[in-house]
Amino acid sequence: MSTPDNNWEDHWRETLADHKASPPSTMDWGGMEELLEAKVAPLSPIKAPISSLEGKTLKLPGLPWPVWAIAIALVLALGYWLGSHTALGVSQEMNTIPKKTSLADALTPPADTIFDTLFSVGANGELTEEIISIERAIVNRTTAQKSPEINTSLPAGKSPSPSTPVNLNREKLKAGSNDIAPSTTPAVLLSEAKAPTTSPEFFTGIRRPDTPSSAPGLSYDLSSKPTVRPNRGGYVRPLKTLSPPTDRELLEQRIKALSLSEKLVITPLRYKNGHFPAYRPRN
Amino acid sequence: MAYPADKSAHHLLPACRRGDRRAQEAFYRLHFPRLLPICMRYLRNREEAVGVLNHAMLRIFQSLDDYREEQKLEAWLATIVRRTTLNFIRDEGRARRRFQPENYDPPASVANAAPGQLNAEDILKLLQALPDYLRVVFSLAVIDGLPHQEIATELEITVAASRWRLAKARELLRGHYQSINRINESLL
Image (tube, rainbow over all chains, first blue to last red; front, side, top):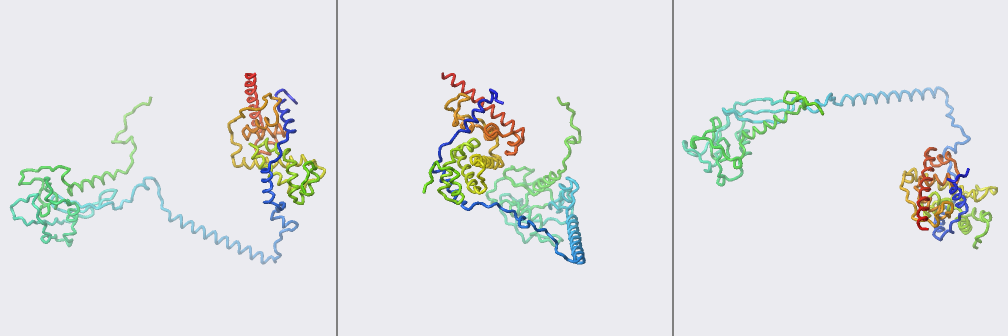
């Protein structure tokens, strides 16, 4: 039905039905010619592969029934063997998968994990070797071995001066009753590792008395209390920027770091400081 | 020997079946002006339409053995051209490029703007300015007169989508008409 709304549509249909485009250009026919030359031979309909079987029926070879029975039994046996073999392999793989029951188990290392070994010197000169695990520091063993005393070539009674360079006489080092060589004693190794590389002649700061071997040739008895130097009449704390960290400071720092690293257990916020937070109503 | 331009297509058919290139060229030049507008009302521009028409002509040359003399040659050719064009559009539509919604960018001007007096070139210009997914449905429904069910089958869309696209195309074209009329009235 023609309505005013689609009058223009009828007009369009009639106009386009009578419409003729301009004749093809040479380029248009050139494109057509390329197509014809590319496909000169007419395309024959492609036959499906199954069409070669048209008119034929697929028949199984005519074998006597005992042969079929044996063949079926063989196939079943092979399938059963393959199935059981696969199931056994899967069960073995499942047994090797580690079980992680919870997130806490996954994050917490085993209790016997050795994290570090610490050597500390007690006030009475005892060298204590501590094996620190992430769970808790385990005091493995304490060797009642005194650190070797380091003697200097200075005469007795004369107080050593920090600025006096005196060579360390290692031949006079005495090992304890233990068979550990003095050069491999932890305290010695630690003192050698932490010794300043600067020459004593250029070191102008005041040295802390318990700094081992920072001034070569000086002798300190670790069993005595080193906080008071009688020749100076008191303990003067050196400037931080001029003194290297002592062994004790290093040990304290490491122990502090280890103690901080133990705080791996994530506690809920409401238990912070052992208290529930104050109740604040939401607006 | 060159084939005369006004020679009937039926006389060219035997030579075309044999693969005579000059007969094929004459057949091509004879039917090109009638078949190209079919492609142009579905596609974006003349270059694209010529490319699709060449593929349709290739199918025609390969299928000349299937043509029966009692059929009307013009209708048979138009059917092949339209189906080839729709196949091309459908293949592009599978690539999800052609049927994406686009902005309607109507042509800046047409020769005569009266709604019922547009010539074929202006009609094609307006159609080609439509978004692809609207132009194809409009051409199939309005120019070719296909029902929505058949359009939906051809374009692999739903009937509701076909209806919506036709309504949208009409709305855009009508709005463009009104704007052109307003411009013409102001110029008079």
